[in-house]
Amino acid sequence: MQYKLENPVHGTIGTGKYQCTIEWRNGKFIADEPVTSGGKDMGPDPFTLLLSSLASCTLVTMRMYIDRKGWDIPEIVVNANMYKETKEAGPDDPVGRGKITTIIDRDIIFLSPVEAEQKQRLLEIANHCPISKILEGDIKVRTFLFKDSETEKKINYANDEITVVWKPEFCQHAARCWKQLPEVFDYKKKAWINPHGAASERIIEQVKKCPSGALSFFYNNETANGSRI
Image 1 (cartoon, rainbow, N blue to C red):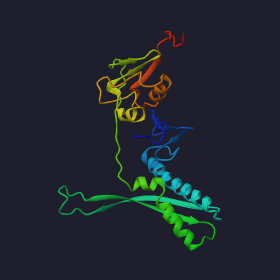
Image 2: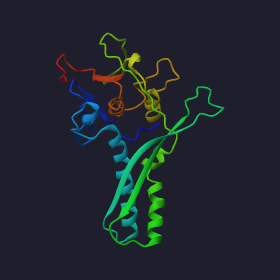
Image 3: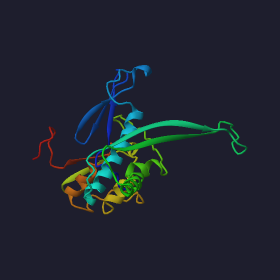
Image 4: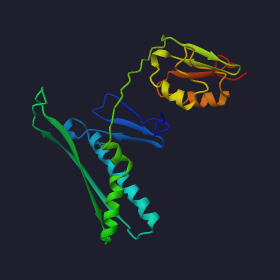
């Protein structure tokens, strides 16, 4: 298993209604709810962000293809919106709620003349942009609740240079470590971290990728204030 992003998208919210700070690899921005939902509309709402992902991915994918082909198409517009459609409950629906389907409409507009064959090809390209494939594929959202107590159980695994600290109760992504550095991490073993399995620098690199805080490390020659001897 390999995550798409090296570092996860990081979101925080305080007591303000309902501004969220979203941090990504190169900065941060504000997400909010519209005034009609109690927010201040200081940033895009979650539905806008979702549709923005589709619009931007569509535009970038088409631009890459246009540039590769050397076509003269200077500007493209994509409009995206969504609605829900409810199908009446049938005999195979014991709850009787019917099936709710979310429909996303994507409009592609060329602001200069484009040949019919080029339009058709770009329509095919748009339908295969990565976000389109995600939205039309089998999506599962996994939610993990992380504990924050400093009294949680800790297990140390040491080599001559570093000690890897593992908090079992925090661990939610062991498969990630196992697949990315199997010489060190093997969830099938009771002592699942082998600190001698790879160079300390490589182990540190993997530990820093832990999204849950279950893994950390320290140098064995560190003093109490964190400096190296």
